[in-house]
Length: 169
Ligand SMILES: C[S@@+](CC[C@H](N)C(=O)[O-])C[C@H]1O[C@@H](n2cnc3c(N)ncnc32)[C@H](O)[C@@H]1O
Image 1 (cartoon, rainbow, N blue to C red):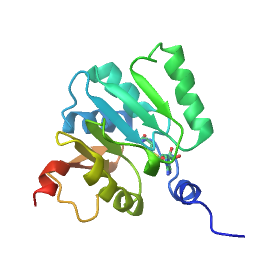
Image 2 (tube, protein in one colour):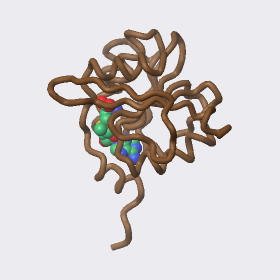
Image 3 (tube, rainbow, N blue to C red):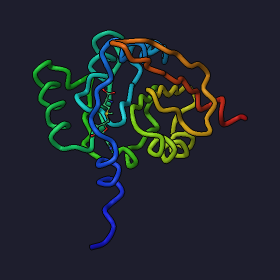
Image 4 (cartoon, rainbow, N blue to C red):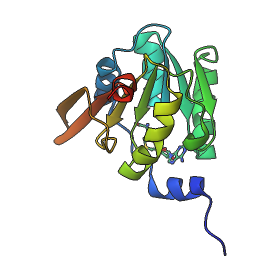
């Protein structure tokens, strides 16, 4: 049997572990999400990041989720809440997602996935974009800010990056 495709390998390595809701809000605050900006959650799980971006920050969201079942649950919720204008769901490997329309990217992945994504983000993200990573930093990127929040007995670490500043390093 040949090697598994990259997407399947990545999915088997990155399980669904949801970010607690108060930490989701901290991530979006840290990125200073503004109304009408577009937030991409790469590996969207149950879609909580994009629903929060829309409901609490008046932003728009793109939920990228490889798992077809999870992506279909997000789509159903989008339809139920009549949010089709505000939220797009892309059932695909996040390494294939074009990022040129993202104002903010949120990540709760593993270090290897963050590392693989970093080059793509530097090339594709627009100059104003911000990236917030939960618990796992992006290797070799210097964060603009690091925020520690204790929730439910666990310290959650959030890293804010501005790829534009990294490009001019
Ligand atoms: C740790 S969970 C984070 C969920 C959500 N972003 C949050 O913070 O609550 C990671 C999610 O990434 C998805 N995932 C893993 N590999 C992926 C890939 N290559 N492309 C898209 N989604 C992927 C998993 O199915 C899982 O739902």
